Length: 309
Image (cartoon, rainbow, N blue to C red; front, side):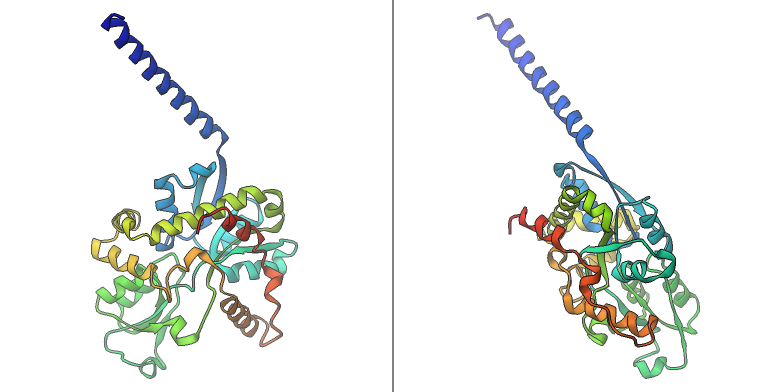
């Protein structure tokens, strides 16, 4: 066969493969299901950043619509009115939605765990013990802002605040100090988790399971030492951190005591502590409700069954 026809045949084959690839990509994009996820814009978003970049969610036919919240009130409202499908936040928000009168009828269920909050008790440099803090101003802040850090930096009369990464990292770099991690001071606590409207879960069970499997795979990628450089890069870009701040934040996120929990497992004892604390504050020491009232981990269990160990 003449060289011209051989070359032309190769070009046609390559062109056909390109067209096939484009068509396949378009088909996958068309079949992708949008999942609207609401979360706070903290360092805890790292699994989403890495998972999206690596195509982990896309491979299961999921297109993420990440919506960052300003506060827990708007977050709960968005879930209740159907503006979002899935929430990653403090699980006491799910409990609040189930219990608060204005949220009556909004049946919420926790479907996966997260972490213990990664919180540290940060104080001014001249304070050394909790006794030194007694009688002084403590700053209370939302989880998605640096206002507590800013308040303590601007006015030394603001003695202390509970902070999580990257703000706890930045505070220490500014000369403040940590008097300890809340889980060391108070014991196990289930802070973060994943929750949905119970009816939405029933109607979108397979999609929810694919989502949970994608998140766990993304979380495993965050733990993989081979991905450290990418994780640090993503934290620097998304949160406007210096390399040192991003490195320290990443280290805290992987800390087995206060960072991510492997495979986002829910801690039963930690969740009991969450419910006990709410009962003490909201119900003035009333009876602690059973954890099963707020949990349905069957989606998580089926999702985990699809992942290799």
